[in-house]
Length: 342
Image (cartoon, rainbow, N blue to C red; front, side):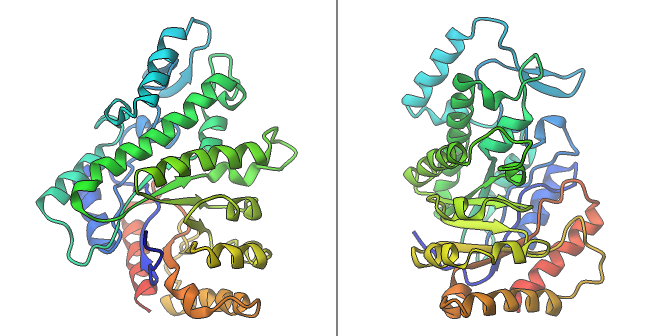
């Protein structure tokens, strides 16, 4: 498994487009070395990150009138649970597929790849919602976070892992390494007074998903677009950690020993240095590269080899762009390519 990325550009996942073909074309053209399949939350509520990976989960109900999903724990879920866990044990990846209703961008991306892989492509990138984010976003019929339902949350974690495995299986025929990011925006709440979830639990569930990704030959990444329990994340088995280097670089750099150990074992940093929500159009590639250089200089003072940091480096936007406009998104991706090319 390679860990040399040499500052290639890739994306997070969500784009603001409603036309799947247009979104897939933009992803392939803008991120030719590591293209992403586009999530399209403005197209359908089922493409939001809390719903996109929910198909086949036991007890999951879709309320199209209210544009929401939830778990119905009022009825006997034993038959659904038994079927689900048996399919998991059988490694029946097709059972866990993401349908086109939930991921139109995935299928548009796949059809484009079947016509021809972009010249220079080195990786293909997919994504899933992380267990903490899913578990604290999706609720039962009474409004309780599903993370507190031990049986169903176990199913959630295994379901997310299998969604990742299914993506890897679908992309295998193209012959490129597959990166799967576990998107965890809720990580910022971990450890706060409002969180009743233990870091040890999150670490355990992340590693369970990471192990499945590795088992299928994939490369596992974790994306956090805010602050996080960085030492805990660096100590998981993840291959890539993607952080908001535009807004939170100073927070990440507080843990040089953990970063040093992570880099030494082959881990890569994906620097989310190109702003998304904060993007003004006044940012320059030179200014953003200087931010990365300053971060690497700080790590260099802690004994981390700069050449190795460069090899084990990817460049990304700070977060997904599903809530932006297409015009702003295209400008961000253009700037991203410029930063990567520096």
